[in-house]
Image 1 (tube, rainbow, N blue to C red):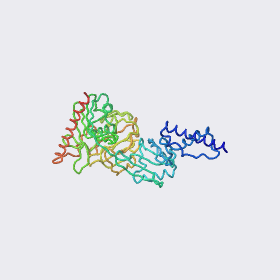
Image 2 (cartoon, rainbow, N blue to C red):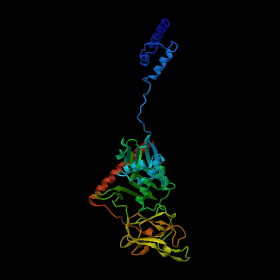
Image 3 (spheres, rainbow, N blue to C red):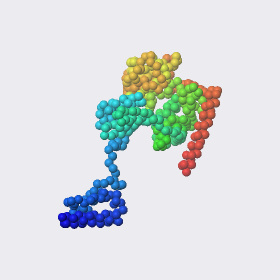
Image 4 (cartoon, rainbow, N blue to C red):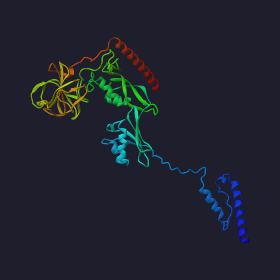
Length: 441
């Protein structure tokens, strides 16, 4: 009995000394130590006591120790880039999302956006958690974001959020050395803006034959940027374009007349759009001109009633003007041919096509620039080419010699408004020229 009491007394003494040492050398020990314990019968020996206290202190949470949280944490968004042949269903299933929840997500998107409109190169941000699809983000156009989220009840909700956008004017100028494409690219012109430039001038400029080294260009376009990131979105909208071709100066201004649609106008207020395009195919070279020639297949000299454009097979053929399909079918040496009636006086013909575009048949109305077929070598043709004719009162004339009048010319108050618009653009370009000069110093 005496021995047991002495052991208890010694244990209490050792415990007291340990607590005193801890408080002197570690001020935070009071928060780490367990509550005081009254030694009981069969208490541990002094040699075991410090280990027991240290073990207890380690089991208590401290200010530096994070407390476990049962709340699930969603993974970071991962970005998918759409490739040819991809579908939204397929992309979601590749991430391990089941067919049923993937379809539910797609169904929730449909009121806001048609998933069939998925474009090659489009980016989709996807967030997953332990249940599956938690969040999906994409931009159906550069003006808005589409956000899909899964609620606590497991249902998906989709909403379209407008993006905060700004528009800034950008000036680009350059000199042609080898080609317009190379010069525009070197100057930093976005490809969509270059395409817009070519389309605007295509009524008056033959880009395959009239562009020469030393020719100059200057444009002004509006670039839309994301206000948060500062990054450009969209391809840009051409506002003004000028070209100097072998000393000949051409200027075009984008303008929207009151109650009309936006278009390009020359400096005198004439709409650049003509009744007929200069060439109904892009990237073509003339392989045979209008007039008498030695026929390469028949072997004798005959009148060539049109112009032949050498282009790769399958190149889209465009209607050179608004009109009604007068004929679409096979016609002897012409092969597959389309004839379009534009007015009582003018019609055009397109021959040697490999096939017609969908829906092209007699009586169908087509608009300028609409694809009506594809280049081929049907009929009497030595290779892929487009035979193109312009007919006046049903008689063939030289397509390259036809000069069509503008479809509209501004006058009166509308012309005065255009002049003010023209002056504003001139002031803006002058300011950007000065800014570019200062930046280049």
